Amino acid sequence: MKRRFATLVLCLGVSACQSSNPYVASSNPLPPAPEQAANGPDMSAYPAPTIDYGRYRNWTWVNGRLPGGSPFASPEQVADAVSDGLDQRGLRPAMNNQPADLGVIADAHLETRLQQVRDDVYGGGVGVGYGRYGGYHSGGYGGYATVPVVRTYQVQVLVVRISLFDNQSHQPIWSASAEAAGGGDESGRAKALRQAVSQALTKYPPS
Image 1 (tube, one colour):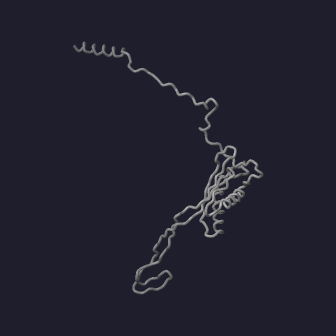
Image 2: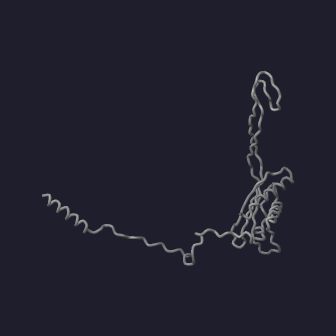
Image 3: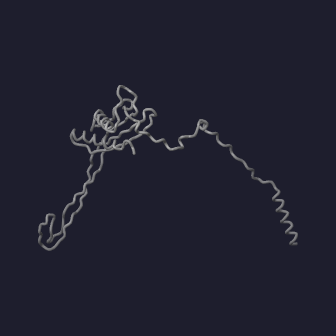
């Protein structure tokens, strides 16, 4: 009986192995190659080439437009400050409508900042001790210490942003911004403008 059962199981196993497999291998076709593949490698997969900032010698305003001004400084004042700053970095304005290496965009505007100032106020209990100036107090012994008081003020600062573009490729190559506290009078505003422009251009050329 046992031998018949074993024979039956073996026959069923052999017949199962000989049956057809219900799973059929299949695959989707590969997508077509992009058109640029025939023209060479995809350069976007490689790091951007290093910019040779030394080849830039002169500049002009993009589309001949002066920088954007603000109530703090007129477009002409911003243009003069940026021109002086670029000159100090070895960049000269293009002369006689000659093609320039660089295109320049700049603007200046006011922004509000919160500034905190800490004042140390001296105080203490009743008693004998030495105050801020070493004065003698009677009535027992006591300690004296400073109590910090933090005051918050709103101040306006002048923010200058300068952007440089390669005039051949029309691609941006450098941009920076800086700010300076605005002065109350005309002389103070002019100084703040020059300071903000100078701080922004200290980052050119990038190291």
